[in-house]
Image 1: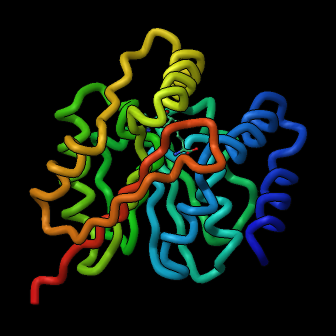
Image 2: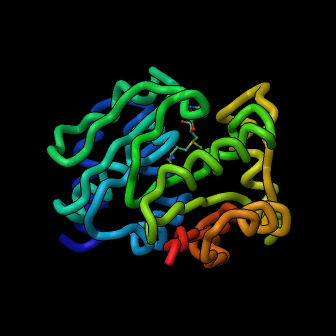
Length: 211
Ligand SMILES: C[S@@+](CC[C@H](N)C(=O)[O-])C[C@H]1O[C@@H](n2cnc3c(N)ncnc32)[C@H](O)[C@@H]1O
């Protein structure tokens, strides 16, 4: 199945659910899922931490039956909509800062780090992901940049609208990259905001092999 057909299929699977159905359409417009999906291995065990409504987990599952996906999410009002009946994806309610993360070929943190409760919580989680990745496995992080400035303003507006009252812990590239470099990763950093209204950046971090 090609990417556009998979997106149509996913939208159908969330049809008739009210706000989640609308949110899914907005998310496909605002998130760089096409670029991110291309970085995710076609096979193996993939964990989507903070998977929300499970949109990206389901998309990954639909685009390759060789992927086995686990989505973890804290918010029950989101995860209850995540299971759309695909056989190669499973979901669990969990606090990813406390859960035991199983060993994986790929771990995803898509717009999740800045919703944790502190910068140190972000670092502890990234280290836990590093530990749980198999050698050669990938940690894929999608976060936010200050630029383009107008996209950063739109990003902040959306975060404050969707998470009213929450403090948001944006971690910008210079700082996040310097932390990631303390771990044994080969890092590819790319801006991924083109074609979206928000200032996304993506970090594809491959765990080095010990040899
Ligand atoms: C902006 S949403 C992104 C959802 C999804 N990754 C996506 O790309 O559509 C951030 C998600 O992280 C979840 N989250 C925040 N802190 C969490 C935690 N400690 N444990 C699990 N999920 C968490 C939020 O509930 C929210 O659904």
